[in-house]
Amino acid sequence: MHCVIGEVRKRSSTFLARTLRCSAIKRAISDGLDATGETSMGETIFALSSGQGKCGVAVIRVSGPSSALALRRLTARAAASQSLPTPRKAMLRTLIHPLSKEMLDRGLVLWFPGPHSFTGEDSAEFHVHGGPAVITGVLEALGSLPDLRPAEAGEFTRRAFHAGKLDLTEVEGLGDLIHAETQAQRRQALRQMGGDLGRLYHDWSHRLKRCLAHVEAYIDFSEGDLIEDGVLNHVDESLRLLQREVEDHLSDERKGERLRSGVQVVIAGATNAGKSSLLNMLCQRPAAIVSPVAGTTRDVVETCVDIGGFPVLLSDTAGLRDTQDSVEREGVRRARERVRQADLALVVVDSSQLITHDPQHIASALDTYMADVLPSPSPTTDDGMVTPPRCLLVLNKSDLLSEEQQQCIMGVLAERGDQPRACLMSCHTSGGVTDFLFLLKDTVKILCGDPLTGGPSLTQARHRAHLLECLRCLGQYQRYRDLDLALAAEGVRLGLTALARITGRVGAEEILDIIFRDFCIGK
Image (tube, rainbow, N blue to C red):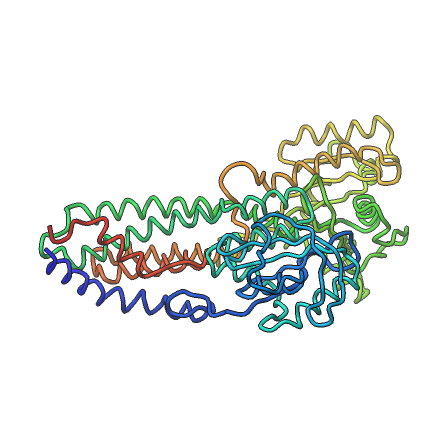
């Protein structure tokens, strides 16, 4: 039996070691690791971890093998025999410059021995008063110690990743949490940082590894009747199920990406419809010039706003009309381009212009207006057709209408089920603004989804690209399954590699481990 197992391992390695181990080493080198997966960074780093500027308390972090030395030297406990603080317990200490012996501050120190720290290394923190002089003094004191250097941007998190404390999706979630500006962004980032998205991708990776191991084992050992019947059928079913799950994950209408980067909302319409007034009302400041002169806005005016806890990038655009003015014509071109790129278009209509029409023609007048503002569906190379963005119809200047005229317009709209959601309002008097804001919040929430319900959201364009590549590679398995099983297996391996690039983890040894764990080879 030992001879058979030895031969099995030898034969497995000829194929797997050439393909998987080689790619693992290349990836390790590109990630700053040696071939065994150990970090090549042995230096101790330090940096201000709290925000810049004056504050009540500043946190200075140290990580690396000399963290204990730094903690002892700055607290006047240079002798190795003098004990460090109890791990993860704040202790009040006087901080001393290790060279001049000058008192720097009196603050809290914490000790985090590795591997039970954020970076997985020995780490220390100094919680000091947040004045610039105190912070500078402590940083200079740390810089005077041997083997310590200032950290580069993101280096603490990079070390946490190399130590296996975080995968890349969790790293990205941490970055998103730091930059979150709305409550919905915070909720999504916390969920991703907590590992929900990473666990989904790790589960898919684990299933792909099993499929790959089974196919590799079938290639190497099926001739000797060492592999159970039905192995490939089981692989086929597992891959079909996984493909459906990945496709469902991708068909999320980009809600997670939209929540992360902000919903693109464009205000569009004819000149003097009240677009700039609507922008100023939404952002609560005079962001755009408002004038009765038609064509005042010529370039795109952007501002970020929080709508019901969701991030919105709001754009005011030039009024749409035919003009001989070359500058205004360029503004109109940019406005139409921005509408094509929008997630949501707020089509602003001067409702006072509708009362000049017979009530029976109000709907047709709005149809003509909407057709001029919104782009027509156009073919693309990827998705088949580009559809117009979601749209809200904003019937502005309702203060110029009588009650009867308002009821007439809304009655006509109610009879037309194919019209977009509409709201009658006045930026001048704020009449109907509450209803409009409720409608806008509801639409934005639909575009972003609820980050706390359902499966974890796909939040990065790179995730989408790697998942699409994974599906393409799994399609290779389907094409070559009955023609050349080695090429089919290569498709599974490339799919696994594409998936692993999302989390940053894949190893050749894991494939071998599954082969010898799942199959009774040599029995």
